[in-house]
Image (cartoon, rainbow, N blue to C red; front, side, top):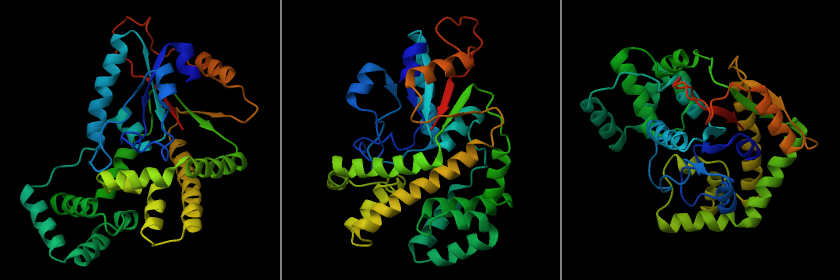
Length: 305
């Protein structure tokens, strides 16, 4: 927000969970006051029980960015969803679509009790996908199978080819906290979410319509849902949420560092926010802004994590 204020920007969320209405506390969604100070976009787009795809995000981002630029402001993308970052800079993964007949056959087989046979097939044809996907994630399991049947190539191979296009070709920065400080911040933040009413937030969403498969996987939400269902205890839910957040951040950092043109900025509690924002702005003086009228179509600034 300090950076947006300095350079006349509006913030475009690059977070896959901020798109869900009502999922506020567990996603650390910007408050009403913060959104009143600096305009935010790509937040509260759908209900938690509705499905939302990367393609829909890109469509919404294109529209929001056009509106921001029309007002003479700069678009500043902020968030940590790596898939959104990759899609914004490299486009969607282009995999041939399977015939509707094949998808219908696979869905029917799954519905008629053939889940294990299909999981075994995925293990044979694409062990990398089988390891990554949850055993109950029917949508993605069937997608991986149909891709192989149609192309003769595992879906994970298509994805690796897409990911090898590593350069962002955009001014982008990742904020890196010292690990020991980050560990404390993660635990303190989750406890603050619980104190603010995260359990009650989840119960309200359940009463209104529940969670889609994607929304239910959100860190914190998934563990609280398991506790509410009696699958795990409350202390275990807390510990799992904190531990899995730490694991996710390590994976995010490893993935982000694969981009050779991403600037990693180390920060700490002694850094003054406004000074840090000014330093980042000075580093990327070439950012497109309201005074850019050359029609170059430059992409927006991106800030991860």
